[in-house]
Each structure stands twice: as C-alpha cells, then as structure tokens.
Length: 342
Image 1 (tube, one colour):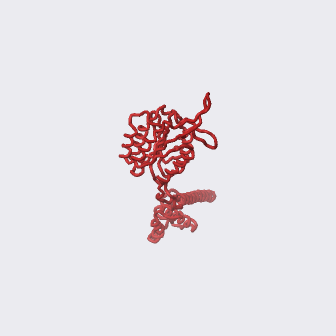
Image 2 (spheres, rainbow, N blue to C red):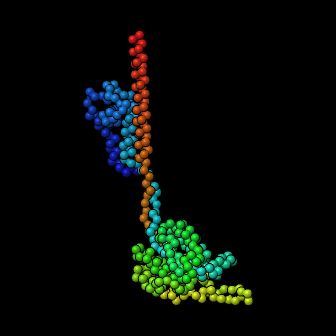
Image 3 (cartoon, rainbow, N blue to C red):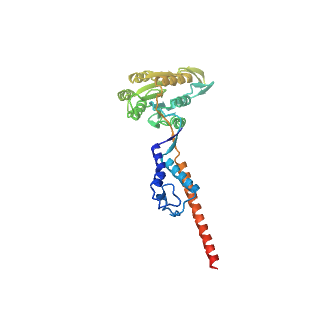
C-alpha cells in the first residue's frame, strides 16, 4: 500500500501558480518560469529575457516542481502486517559434561549412543521449538562455564551445543556451582520468566557452593528449576568373564534433584531412554509455554528518492538542452556577423 508521510506538503504544488499570479507584468522570466520563477532564474544557465519560453519547457519545469514536492511529502510503501519476535522466557540450559556422560546406555534406531549424544539430539529439537525465548547454555563438570549467553540466536546456540565435548569442564560434577552460575545470569531478568533446565547423571562431587544453598538462592531470586536425571537403570555389561547386568545410574542423586525442583516451583524428571528424554522436554514446553502475544508492525519502505531522482534528471536535461541551444544560437549569430562584414 502506498502512502505519504507528510501529505500536507502537497500544498506546495500551488506555489508556482501563486508566484505567477503575483508576478509583475514587466518582469517576464525566461526559462524557467515554472517552478518558482524568480528563485530558479538565478541558477547557472538560466537568464531573464523578455521572450517567453516554449510551452513544453514550462511543462517540464512544472513537472519537476511537482516531483520535488512529492519527494518532500515522503512517499512510502507500507507492507503487510508482520509479527515482531516475541519476548518470552529467559531459559538457561545447564548440561552435565562430566566423563560419566560417556556411558553408552541410550539407544537410537537400534544403535547405542552415549548420554551426551542423546542430549544433543533432543536439545536441538527443543531449542528449535523455543522461538521467542532467550536461551542460554551452561556446561559443567568440576567447574561450570557459559558456553552461550542468553540469546535469541537459536541456530548459533545449537552450533555451540554441538561443539561441546565430554570432559571439557573437568572430571567431577559441581551441580551447586552450575545452578549458582545460572541464577546469576538470570537474576536481572524479568520475574516469572526465569527458568533453568538442569540435566545431570550423577551426584554433586565438587564445587564451592552446595546444591541446597544454590537452590535456596535460586528460589529467593524467582528462578524455577526443572531437573532431569538421565541414564538407564539397567544394562548388560560385557567383560572377560562374561556378561552381567548392572545399574549405570547408581550414582544419580534423585532425592537431591527432586528437592531442588520442588523448592523452586519446578519439577523433577527421570530419563531412562531417548524417548523418555524427548517426552520430558516436550512436557517442559507445555509447562513453560511460549508467549505468542507479540506486537505487530508494518514494514515501511521509503520511495522519495524516485520522484527526487526523476526531478533532478529532468532539470539537468533541460539545463543542458538550453545551454547547448544557447551555444548554437551564439555560433549562428557569430557566423552571420562574419558574412555581413564581408
């Protein structure tokens, strides 16, 4: 849809008519009479003469003035209504990358994969669904570190997740420090939008702050903790003396994770398989729905340069035409004078 930002400026189109009406009869103005005769009459190549100008030049100058006024009125193209990116929750993903995450007790299409590979697959799908939220990523082992700060740039977040590797943060598990760092990153964000999704397969074995203390701080800050314990409860382990059934999740502290979630208004989930892990993140989607009541706007494209450019081109063309015509007329007069003198 086309519109004008300043439609009242179109009244300036009448200025040449008013100036022509008030112009004294004794001062005929050669090109250009229009627009605004006296203003443009002092420009290079324009002279005052008693003779009138050809009608087509007057029309060209009038058209030039109309185009300039139209450019000043700022024509615009207003596009279709577009929804702005919504600002939903600030959600920090906290992922354990200690060596125990290398346990291959997850299965995808009949093939065994380790826990971190399963987490990457499921989190990629989770991240892609959270358009409108700001997501961040904290990885932890002996110490936590921010792999990606809170951002709307979800593709970059997915890339940084894929670049994470087991053991990059040490060989222990500092759950308390990880929650403390996530809380610190979220504390300045709006309340009711601070969410931490913590995933681990073990118990707290390192760190300067205990998980209970970190949970207390998170609750006081208004951060909700959703905790996920990952790892199968039973698997066949093969050895030199044969096979035996073991519990690869024997170190998982479910009581701690449950307590942390309950004290902050969140929920604890148990992921024994890839399908359960996928279901858990879909459940979190439902518990923390994306806000869709974003604002709308219409993209505006300015078009003033088109009438302005055409106006300048017309005026320059007329200026060059008159200058060349003047030179040609003087050359003819000079040639005629030489013939008469002879």
